[in-house]
Image (cartoon, rainbow, N blue to C red; front, top):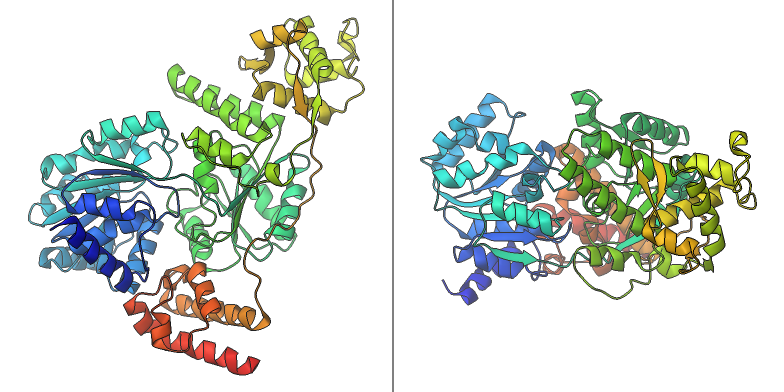
Length: 597
């Protein structure tokens, strides 16, 4: 089959089954590569349509496509969406009954099943591999491929056993996909998944619909509450915390303020975790307060904000987690609140973790990059994309672009800080140094630097320490978190290098709504469609977004369709969904239109 014929058939499936008019970014090139018997490594940001890159070839090829996926919830949501689109798909996992497993096995034997989702540990079991011997296989799709790398942010040892599949079935084509991988992680993926001759596709990491905001931590719970009430009210969101205790504390605090918040962490009973994840997936306006245990596999496209109330340990973690907002492409917010203690605590966790020294040094370097992102004064999107090797123009709508930080000559204050660090032998932590500078540590009153920084508040000095750390002027050593001078610090003390820092920015949550402003009739239609979608989803016991996501909903609102022909132009409505839901959608549109008339 020629490339032209491949794309003609692929576009037909794209429109008729999935309801999209054309491919995005590199989707068509990836599909063509797979259909011409090439292996593929695809790096595409969250929300870029990775799933279509293997789902469409699966429908074009003879045989079964195996999809390796790490989470049950993700498998079930994707299978539900495929079945609504008229695609024969199933998920094989521990939640299946013996009768359900037998039915899936019969579908595999008969050739009626096109896609099977399976966890990596089950996929490499001898029993499963032996069963596959008599099943025609066409494609192996490995989702969240960064899990194979020890340098990735979600390393999972079972991913390293996947080579058993292609060793047993050497003819099977493979596509490995991930949303986040630096150069070292990419090289590890290629080596571990034996993709040396694969075609690599790296899409832009840009998420232009996400508004990045970073604030200095100062009474974090109240800051989070203010943010949610102003920018996240009646929206679905995720709040990430470092510890289980912190999750419980923040969830309870939000609930006390009448916010629909649920906790999620590995310490909760399995039934409670499953129930909370199900509610988050199926209901509107739920805020999940979670550790990173609530991570991969979040397929919900209408998450309008992701808030970090503690500092992520790397740019990769931050990008992956914040990228769970706005998968549907609609305006969304990444909000990060952090302080000096976050740096020290995260650093301590890395140093005390059970990993080798080489890995610790890598993790500490990634933490330094994360701090630099928080403390830099230019466009945040530019910094993120540059980290992943991509250059772009300023976004004009992150916090630094909207309100550029004011800079000032901080050379004298920084020299005072460095002098204090030197005078105590570089063996005191930041809190002790600040107490000395402010004249609060009485047993250091004989030092010449005692009290020379009394003109600044604790908050002011902590900001200076953070910025000095980010600029490489000071560094933290040992498990006691003592501050030490760098070569750059020596140059500053000798008046050879001036220092410019930014003033603390006064933070007050403001609404930065950039979506479409709706007429009264459009808003009534939006609400009516949301209510119908939610009721249908409850009856079918599936997530509401599986029926259609908010982007499709807004497309309906803007078009106000009156005929089935109009519905064929709605993004995200394929032929089966139009047949199943079209009459209901048109009836709702007529009802709202008649009321307005």
